[in-house]
Image 1 (cartoon, rainbow, N blue to C red):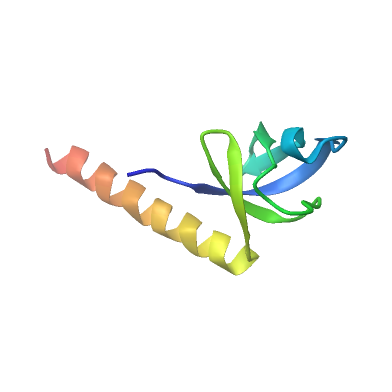
Image 2 (tube, rainbow, N blue to C red):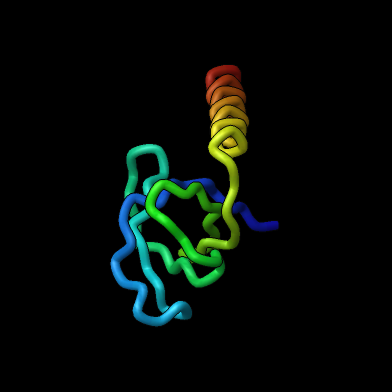
Length: 85
């Protein structure tokens, strides 16, 4: 199983070659360099799903927020288990 995490493209660092296009992607306050080759015509402001440093596809902001809500719930359940454990 793999986990793709949504992030928002903040800046395109280079777009000379589509295979090596790299951008800065923000994951809820943490920014990382990501290879954007998997997304056709990436733009600043686009939301993308990222796995292992590669953007796999574009998604809507609403979908990204829904994923963040699920991740927060999972985190809450984990804290509850630790407190009860």
